[in-house]
Length: 236
Picture 1 (cartoon, one colour):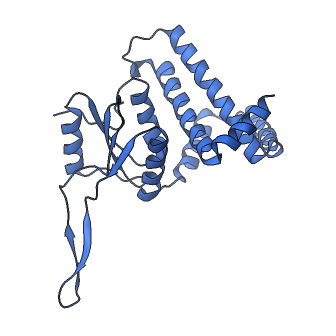
Picture 2: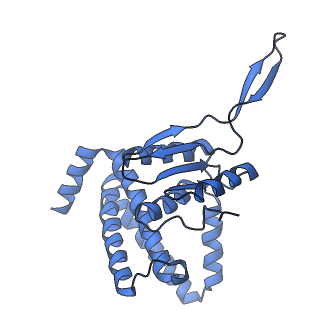
Picture 3: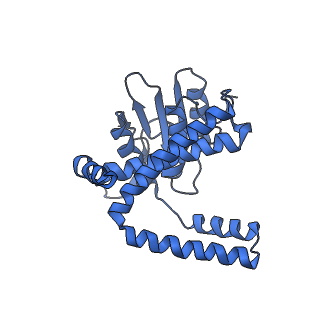
């Protein structure tokens, strides 16, 4: 019965929307786990019991989207991967593999995930479109030109530091978002712009060098937790 409903959802909403929903639900679970297990990150006064129910709700969402992904990828393929990874875990436990070694492997694996600025921006704009936002691209950068002799040169257009995207939705907080390639950081002008925007109530500015980083911050804003320290610099 569940598979039939999920297959119907794929037919009605399409693969792209369902995959985007899966990414969003995974990020929301990450946010809730971070708040519960790293209590110093909380400032909303929620009780441990309420936090557990919030996590349970996100786990349910993630299990649903994972079942949808199983339909797309194939249950046999996923089950084979699970068996392999469980056997690997069993071997690690039997061999006494240390926690530090496992963490180093995780970090090394995650370091291989690179996204260009264009990739991040496209994914952000697509998700925000699904969420009902109007997203305005701010063309704020260099433009290649030619002089009368055919020599190429660049001119700067716009105001230094202004973020890439301005996002608005009726009834929601306005957002300015700066996208970066993985590993890149905002410029001093961009940090100054971010501090200025975040000093004004009712709007947020943050940056992200990956789609995951964007999702973590966007979900915090959407769920009413405000902007985490990850993408914000406090007003000077």
